[in-house]
Amino acid sequence: MATQHCMVRLRLTDGSIVHAASYLCRDGVLIADSDSFGEIQLRLEDLSEIILDPAPIRPPKEPAPKRPIDTAEASERTDSKPEEKK
Image (cartoon, rainbow, N blue to C red; front, side):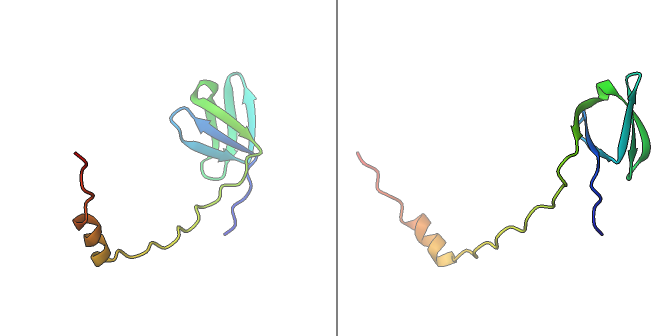
């Protein structure tokens, strides 16, 4: 399922984000139409950021596979401690 590009991204003062397809600001209240929540009304003081025409959110990339630990190599590292200089 392809995600639809939103017109505005609203960041609330608690750090949460709401995406909206349309919005209207009237009398200190922002009225937005969100696919997730329907029509919502937010006081302007509850918003920390309004991002117009935001870049699409992309999922994180798959991390590179980690190399398995060689137990013999790991024990050599802990056994051979450098000598302290006096």
